[in-house]
Length: 191
Image (cartoon, rainbow, N blue to C red):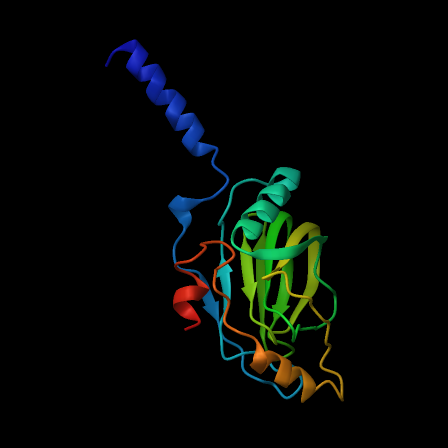
């Protein structure tokens, strides 16, 4: 191989390996289905966990998540963590992108499942699905909502339901997946 061709090939390889979107790893998300436990309504749709979905971390990762989610019509974004109490949203589905650190999340309420997440992971949470931060280390999250919807915080307290159940039932299925856009992900799974 000629030196010029070899150097060009190395340059393309370097650019390819720095991409923030991990298309090589983009397989079907893990699906976690949680049923109504009497306190947390959960959902007929599975929570989707994209492990190692993107490679940019820290502020670069947070900016990339905000831009990528917005390009797929998931807006009204924020940067922070996950509440340390069981909660769910009834007025919107939610996406969480982990741009730094790691956490042990309790998903689906007390009878749910404990899941470790880390920088590079994206979690698509259907309205009604409980989530809670059990422990974390340097956790940074970008959260966003389909179509920029307003969100509420419900804790499974007496009196929340049946109002929250009606809100959840009235929500349309999103037109885009926050990571994959108009195909794949929740578009294929939440039919």
